[in-house]
Image 1 (cartoon, one colour):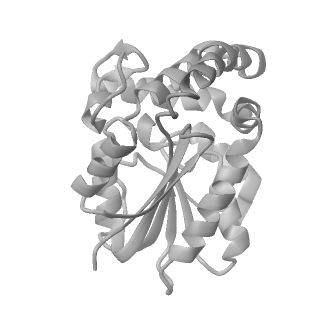
Image 2 (image 1 turned 120 degrees about the vertical axis):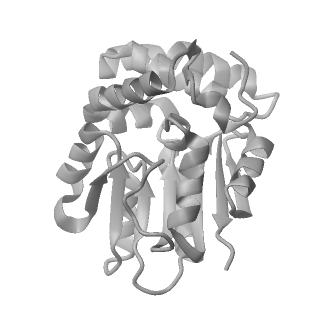
Length: 251
């Protein structure tokens, strides 16, 4: 299937399969419940550890843009909590809420961080949070797995306080010269690693296909603007394989 030009194109796809939206939601949630115990190890192996460098930059820029005050930070689709744990180390006095629809992923986060974080099992499209109540939302490699990613962005805009920021890290479209090399790794290496390490080749086949379907930089910039947020900063990693986009809610 070709790369999507808008987030709505993802609502009825599960990798390269066309499925009903509710089936996509249930399949993705079950997938992450299954792979949660080895998720962090697989991330290290798939990216040769570079995802940690990307997230370190995300943390640095998040701290730069963070509003002062007591409003919490929400790590949306926060999975096993690695980003939230790093934020906690840098901001010992701030409320940090990890939210994820997968009980398995949140269970790993709770094992790692204990009472240092708050935990909320919820879909990113329907957050049980008050409007304008959050200082910042971090969202790392989770937007493409939402059942309705465009609605997820609108929810971010709803819960952010005026002047608050979304710090988004997602896979993107690699530079043309690098795309063939990355394609070999993604299509042939990652699923085999998934089979050997996570014992779930199908899950990692889906993850590769979801990466290849995710909209490119310019399309994501339009989606962010459509949600009511102003793009203020961007940075590409590894020749466009991943991209950080930071957007502000207007005051």
